[in-house]
Image (tube, rainbow, N blue to C red; front, side, top):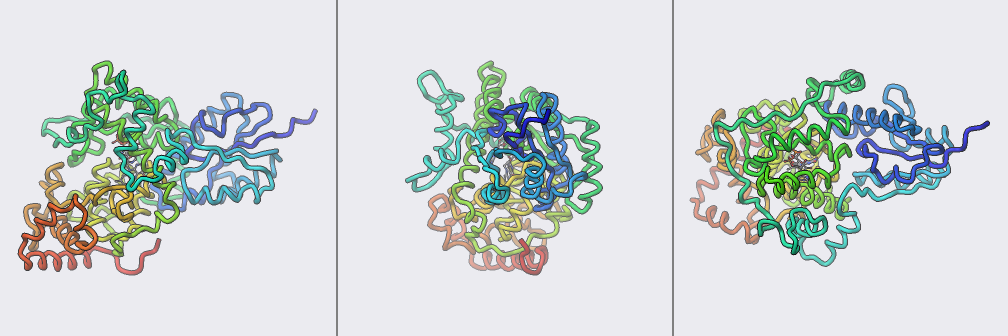
Length: 520
Ligand SMILES: Cc1cc2nc3c(=O)[nH]c(=O)nc-3n(C[C@H](O)[C@H](O)[C@H](O)COP(=O)(O)OP(=O)(O)OC[C@H]3O[C@@H](n4cnc5c(N)ncnc54)[C@H](O)[C@@H]3O)c2cc1C
């Protein structure tokens, strides 16, 4: 007897590794085929870190195994075995040839570029394509657009409060935030005490599938950025759950207090190292927040830690995605300060005398991870006050972190770190001098520059770049009420001092920035 014709081809992308994906609902195990494909274009469209490629491919292969174990029919195309898998289109066209489905079902992708492509799949294949919402997010794209409609400015804080009300997370019986405040961020800026011993994140020994993928990446992506070994990420849902439980037990109680702290040689401090798992679907955002809330309600975790974590996930994570879909494709072109300088080589090599940058880039190269303040206030802050081109900076962030996908990376880079969007996402630029870095870290102790100096051969470049940035963009920034105080300080400085910082900034940037036109 001939096999029943394939009814639905369900195409699951590499960051959609959850059994709860909308594309996998109403699945008929006897007549549907799940298609998964490792495609060359996705591995190569950004200079992805080797650990990131290995993570995604291994997690995909493990997910396919889980689906097969459930008895589902999975058509999995690996990079080694498939010639057709240049991009999603060719992988899909070849699968349509093989299976002749009546329809194709997909969940919307995380990137505008892929969505544009997806809109052409029906024409290309001649088979009806149903694109479903990605309901792993609490706010759909339409929800966010409704929330944003008619507002003069979009601020994460108000969006976040709505998300708290909607989920009931950390709310009391009468609909008020527990603890009487929505936001405990001001409690979360403590410097790390010298005797603090932060835990290591959970690490996992690579199994056979991961070892195969690691060999493949070593072989095919040798010229990509970053160290492949040691590879320690979770690659299955149960490992990601275990990694998160480890965080909850070992680090969450202090997550709030030391959220903004940095220390030499410490890569993760009390952070969750969970974004890479959330972003591919190995962890569920609402479930991790409920777990954190339960720890607070059981009295094991202080409110500033629980609230701080939950705000990052249902607040910032959802908000950045909302801004992305609301503002693309123009958002990627934003360049409020007309910044044109090219990325210095040390963003790739880590070879610089600036100890803070050396620490952050080196750990990024080794681990494909840096925590938020390292990304925002060290590499991001430098890029902002040095006037680096937003496209080059964004390409860097998209490549070097294991959790990087454009929907979250781009608003964080153009909006939060660079203020390239002119204030769509943040109310003022996160520009800071070396003083901030000294307050929040011990990086300045090991540095050849003197953080107390703003001019002269030993002056900390963050100092003269900072004041030069403010002076240079006075017209665009001085009217911002949140910048008034700092402009008053600048105005009190002798003109010669400002001029001297300007010329030192120019000489420094001419020396460290690459020459030639921007290439992205
Ligand atoms: C320039 C720049 C680029 C960034 N690029 C990315 C990226 O490509 N992918 C990414 O997931 N995050 C990005 N972030 C946000 C943030 O830095 C990371 O989510 C965080 O460092 C991940 O580490 P963690 O899991 O230990 O986070 P934790 O500090 O433990 O926070 C818990 C969770 O909250 C969420 N979160 C925290 N801050 C943010 C934020 N600003 N935006 C969105 N979600 C947030 C993450 O899912 C994270 O896992 C970027 C930030 C900056 C400043």
